[in-house]
Length: 138
Length: 180
Image (cartoon, rainbow over all chains, first blue to last red):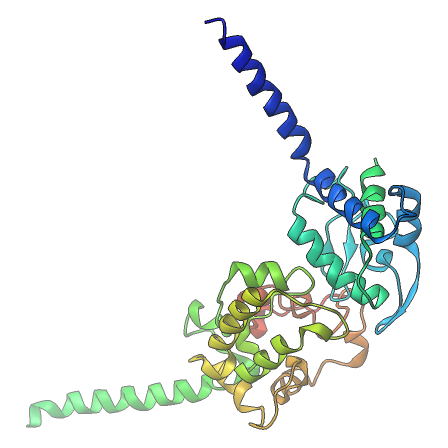
């Protein structure tokens, strides 16, 4: 009987730990942070401000001058629109809770869209800045 | 034998009537509805959740019966530059989508409209845009350039602007509503 509270404690603790680590956006950021650190010793941490600049920066592309904002709208809390007239659900998790919950989906779209907008893959630092910026929007 | 004669006449009349009916209905420009609701679903309405998730996020859900299988094959092999955008998918998804699209393509369809689309494309040609087929051009010859440019339409690729049930394969002329 005396051991019961101990077991209950450990279960509770492991549940809490799992809950903290199960936040998919934070898990994604942890991964990108490790990659960014490995890529450059100068990297300290992500910045929402850099993410904001990255999101708005115009680049020459196959389809003219574009930025992330061209399709996602300049306010990521708003609905965007694809070139083929389909709505794009908002990127900011504050208005669209499904965002940054599925690593495979996030990676797929970074791969496609970074190639379209930048003509190359995004770096782990850029991906992290981008996500941190989205999470900062209330 | 004589007793069968009236029966033969009835059959003959019926056969002639059915032929005329079929010929009259053959005019795509003025589709007859008398054959019932099912026939208005002119392009096969096939559904695949992967197709919807992977392709219809960016654009309309195009019924596979709008293009021949060789076009879909080329489309899936060129996703790296899909009308100017990177639309690549992983290998398993690509395989699944290629199978779905080619097996439901215009040249594999038993439906008349798909067969006509397929027939309007020369065997050496594999268009990536349905709007470049002779069939599409013939059906839309009366739509002026100004209409296509309307903001409510956007481009020729936006079938659903005028054909509300395009994603279900319904392009019946009486359902066409051209937005202002």
